[in-house]
Length: 184
Image (cartoon, rainbow, N blue to C red; front, side, top):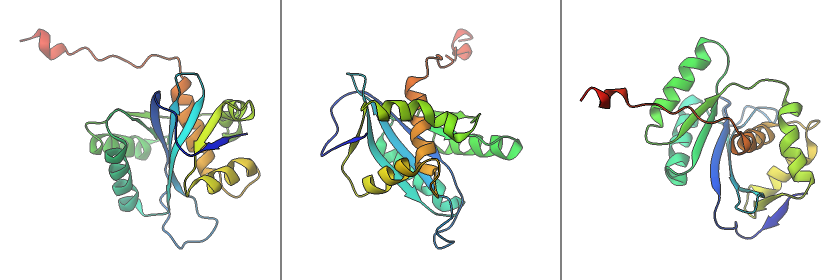
């Protein structure tokens, strides 16, 4: 069960994980959403959903939203983007990472089915270790989580589970040695 609060507790590491779709508004109730879930890991070990941004837009609208939300979140919030397999996914990930220069951006390839990817986040929700901020998006978010995996949409679940994975991943990020400095 997710506890809904008026405000988020202070502190913690924050990520925004995106689940990308390129579907315009008005294409039907079954159309996928582009969703960005901003999640923080609190100092006490719990997690808090700080924001959920959803839209149905064409690729240009999605890109504009990613840039605007990154500016709103600030450079301290890590951005996680999915990378579809194949050349088109690699090109999209490279392009969006370039457009988000100045921010901490990581692209990830999703593996396994959605229910398996969501299971670790669901375990924390069921244990009462996940909070959410009261906002206009909160009811839609909670409804989708409650309906998963049998509901009509899973975009918010995918983004939330991906954000949770990013915050709990124990694999160290690669460090890039500035070789060019050794040549000076």
